[in-house]
Amino acid sequence: MGLRLISLFVLAMIASCNPPADYALVGSAYVPAAHGDIEIEKIDQEQILVTLTLDHLAPPERIELGLTHYIVWFTPVGGLPMRQRALDYDAETQVGRASIPTSLREFELQVTAENSETPNQPSDLLVASQKVREN
Image (cartoon, rainbow, N blue to C red; front, side, top):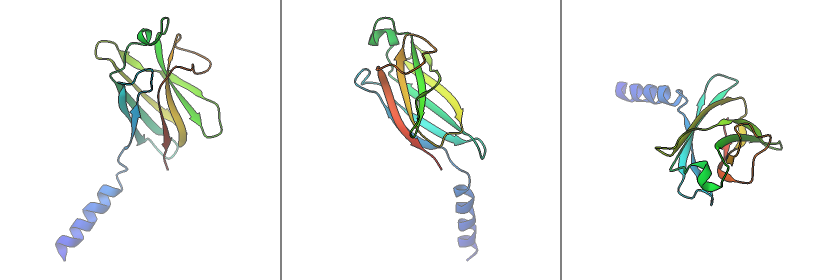
């Protein structure tokens, strides 16, 4: 009886820790080898931290001449895409990373290849996308 009670207590403690959620991130036809993941961590009652990593991500200029950055966008349900930031990209390892706090709980995350670090809207060169829904 005592061991069962302790086991239930430990399981309840683990369940209440809010482990990060994971979403797969797969490259588009422009960069089919790219793949990675999105981790979601709860910061507080208002915000979550979205951390994404893309591996096997070719340099932007290999996709199309003149491209220089990979940009992360969040598009809320029924809304317009909102630029978040450029991926921290390492050309040697071909890995792109970003950590972005947000108050959005349901949105589409997109990564596009761009010729600027501050475009006003996403280009048609979609590198990867994933719908995110958190409670």
